[in-house]
Length: 439
Image 1 (cartoon, rainbow, N blue to C red):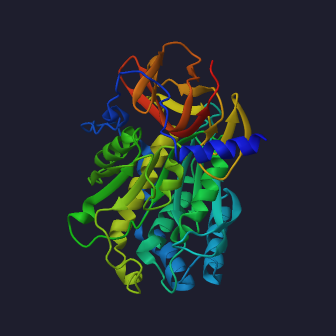
Image 2: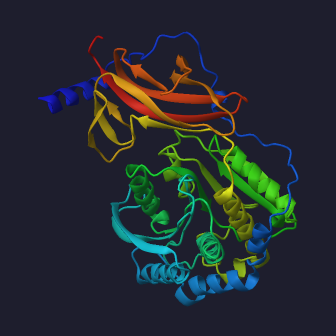
């Protein structure tokens, strides 16, 4: 009976105007959600550990990884023997560095673009942190698969080389935070491998500081683009971009670090594997070359397409930034919505079941709860918005609000935590709210 009622209500959504969850007249400025700050670079003292890490990344190292993937293995289309051979090679590299190494087997139907049923595996190497109090995971990932009959040197053996070189160098040092080095298959089939990994991470409630996505970082054909890195980033990751920018100047790399885009949480698709993380509320930083590659997905994307000097420098930027983040004290507040959760059907604050889609379904009144971690300054308040209208401002923990209005439709919940310095952290979730019971 319950299932029939739910089905009737969902059908009604197609013919009934959406009822507002709130009637507040205060409109939230959508620009408030974008909290990236690109500050003037400050000069810091040189850390010998970071300097040594940078110096260990050289052309000999990255060329060896690149040749193994592109020349020795070649095509790595998901589901082929080449893809399996590449997974074995990556596993052996992680394992030889003493990382906690494992395969993550996944299977998935493709989309109307990528038809068929696919099976493959991600390769994960974990470098455990030494400080239990710094429990936020840092992820560095790239996809190792290619399209059919292509060896994919720039797209994306280059990103995989960044991950392999990072694992090789960073495994030689201890850090406060845990680092996951991840190689995905299935990216060229519709981000299938990264979906499996990100969803498992979310379902396990693993705290994540940031996900780095390395993509095509070996393409540079001019002096200008040879000194440029572009970033796509989520709304709260601006300080991480600042960290990379400062590091580049402090250690003499002197690259231009530019913002390509602020990633929209409600985007319908993404350019690479970072998309699957942003859809589940994680902060992400996608690292791109300074120019696009017209040879991607063509037979010309081979070893001759690779600028090894540029690949060395982009790898240094990513690896050094991760090393800094893995040890540093986080000054920015951190915020995540803990109820409702993505992919759940919720009744009276209880997750009745998980289902494969992202948008949570709320069947009656639900308490919006948060995990809020202060940075260097105390939290001043947390504001709750529905459809960009201010709903409630809470000044004391636990920060929560009971969503109890009559509602029938899709809505967007945003929360913004502000500390006493004015620094903010945000989170957002889209819900299907079906509450037809009066308080």
